Image 1: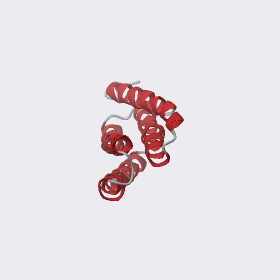
Image 2: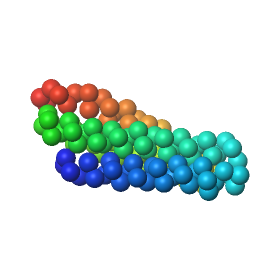
Image 3: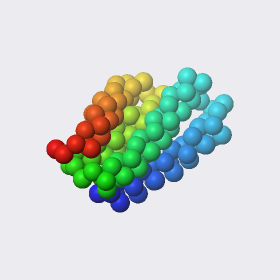
Length: 122
């Protein structure tokens, strides 16, 4: 799983940079400022959790514990639900998509809690 999370983290970081650039250069002036801010929040949290996946890869290599795998998948799922819903909301203007965002937020929180426990044997 170490390589899987390393690769996934790198790909999510790459696409977060692309999303940030798209928001700054492709969307500015084309969507309302409040929706642009929503898009930028999605890109920012995607980058945070892409970097977290690199940490998961490192932690799982140094402290083998099944909670590292759980944390990694929670970060991936959280990115899909949190950032994905914000991207869709910003691009479509469909406000009910904001109701999905907290699912991703809870997944992020659970992932961080799991990652905090990784150094100790499960």
